Length: 163
Image 1 (tube, rainbow, N blue to C red):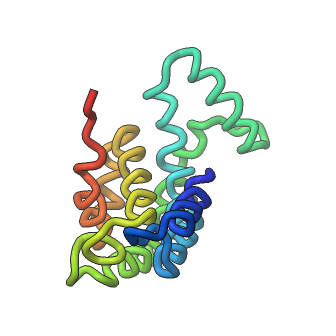
Image 2 (image 1 turned 135 degrees about the vertical axis):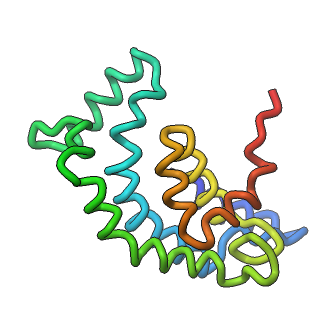
């Protein structure tokens, strides 16, 4: 959770050559994403995340996430009775607005600031990649909104495994 502080530190400590890691536009996108997409991911990704974890990790994940949910809720309850669809519908306009912000400099390139990637691009692409690993359908649903796939595809080279 210190990533944005680290990006700001690097940008101010090592200004040459300039690499814009943080920007007012990026901060706006990150803040809105945490509120809007974070809420949808809590409903759509979190209950499915347990399926990509080892059995030992599953126990810890379930215990800690269900404690956060409170009220005796289970992870599976987030997907029951149309809750997931209601969450997506409530977030639709906000996700569209974030997509429009992502496309602010689209004529210059696929990234938030145009040609060069910034911290925000990796924040968005990393969140999308995490969703893709957990559930391809959730990933595709977000990428169905303009702006998201462009940033994800722009960052793809940095997400390739090299081991």
